Length: 296
Length: 306
Image 1 (cartoon, rainbow over the protein chains, first blue to last red):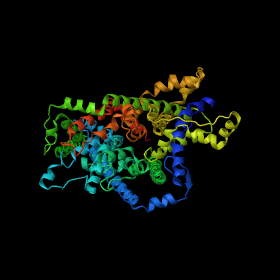
Image 2 (tube, rainbow over the protein chains, first blue to last red):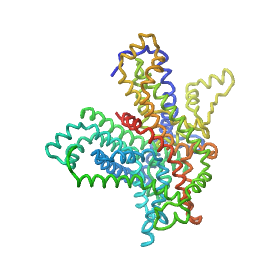
Image 3 (cartoon, one colour):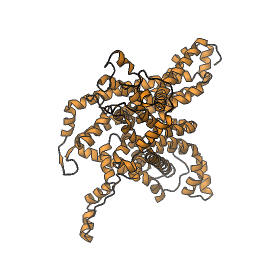
Image 4 (spheres, one colour):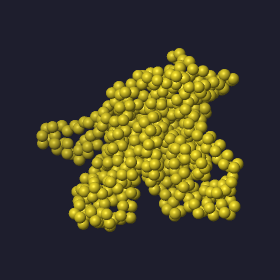
């Protein structure tokens, strides 16, 4: 762990790390501190003093029915999108790892959703699933009004989930395939000699050995869908939180309450709650990273 | 594996082709739509026949989104953030790994904890800091009484002001700090044999010389991987540029222009062909970068999580 040949710790050591510490302090810790301060005070928009109100901001947020509908929307979104993204990537990784002729070509295509900007793919999804044009519009010719995500909340939710799941296929695929390739080949050969077919090997050898990576990805996907930049971009382009707040995810609500509603204190209280959620998820991830060491 | 499983192989190909369709469909449809006329793109059911309007639509999108300026801004943002992250991460990791001082573990954790503070969550106060980046310093001076002291001694009221809104610095600087990058370098530096540093020391090289002439060339692969990941990250930033650039004409990035491309539902036939052309323009650069750098970037992405 420790390096043997270290250099004499002089001012140079501090100088090297100073830029990063400054950035982290000014743009991470200070705003977090400000959020804490605002969460416990009542801030007048654009200056005008603060008043200490204790936990009132939190109780106001937690009593708000709109907040709880956002919590529900966020949970539905996070779990559905994570499940769909992971399931697709898992199936693709398992079959690409059979290394049949040509699977290399497929592989490079599966990676690319990682690089595509979430807002750009959202715009494409908005077109593809538009009620008046695109791929799905024909159902409205048979049965007018059957598909309209700008009116139907459940359909809007399905749309943002699909979009997020598409975007995250690439990332999950990269990790799952790498994990599959690190499974010792001897293990697969031995089971093949014992007469296990490819499907049997997938179920009994590859899947169990994938669980560490799978849990890691589960936590990452959940974190990203709860508080990630992609969730924000997707919602902003596809639905803007609508219809009737059906897709008003927690990350989006903080933004709209803070910048459109100018409710700094309420937004700050929501920020603190979300930070706690991220901390819990990160903690779980680290517990798991600890365990992963034992797997090896 | 040498075995004959013709049926299972067929299933494998079917699944891989299915996956290909899922992954390609949105991009392929965007491309098809971008080649069609406004009438063709609104036809139901959607026709996958390519039109010949691609250049016209790209031109229209280019003009409507003012992509000449916007793409340049996106490149400045992405290059600035990538360079900043790669350099700052290397320097901090070097300090943490190769110098033995008491605060180093604390510094490491201070950087690492930022993983739990995503921008989307602390967006409102971060915006407030960007409006005056010297506010933290001012507050410290006020609280410690230094500004009062200065006011008494020299009669000058200390009021520090550095507005980052509508500037490249404001776009780039808040995105530069990087816990993952620092972690990646730290992991790599740990695997560099101690003997290298010993030999360098014996030959009379100082810490900085060792860093520049030995450690940096050794970590070229890591640097490429990190640079690819961070370029994609920076190019695809949406929320921060949306807030920091109120002067969209001068400092707006290409990504935030996408929202203006959503056709107005009340303005005649929606021109999705132009919107899709814009989406293609915006998504192209990071896709090209990842395609070119695939080998390094996959390795780097996986290494960041170990």
